[in-house]
Length: 241
Image (tube, rainbow, N blue to C red; front, side):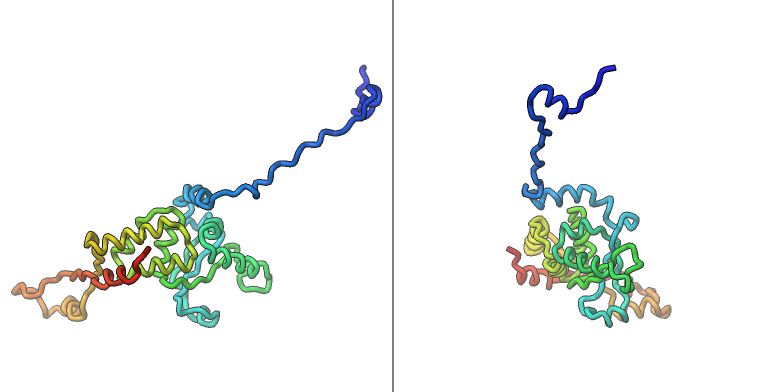
């Protein structure tokens, strides 16, 4: 049976010094700049799968009114909404949420904190416009502007609300600003209108009181659509560049 020699023994017999092969280190990929837009686009490819998915969520956003800022106030007031979220999306899209997640992770690691036993990290946030936050969050996940356009069409002062939330989150995506600017232009040119359903106190009384029957056709039960002219003035004031 042939004897198997080690590399060192074989090297001695052949009168040369054996040295192990040293491979060159792999290049550091951290030194190669990857555009943020590339990472964001890849994430948004999975956006609809993750958006609102509580089973895949590793954190949740507790939305409070901007007037509720102290822990004492938060203890007294219930959150306006609790939204399941995913830290990878939040950290990638928003510098503010990235900082809040870092702080929350430190708090969660403290066994004496009340949230220590919770597996889903809670983020208590106070966006300037809670009503617009869900639409902006959906856009962050999916780049779909449908929810934002719908919010524009159904809420007064919607343009200012969306911009305030975007600035608060620290968003730097030019696409969102393009959407806002496009809406501003459509509003100025009269191509779109903001309509808010309003019911006056007298109309409510007529609906609740049976003695006001529409016998003569004097009282027509219809919802009045009010065109919010102040939105046009708001668009002029914001003057998105």
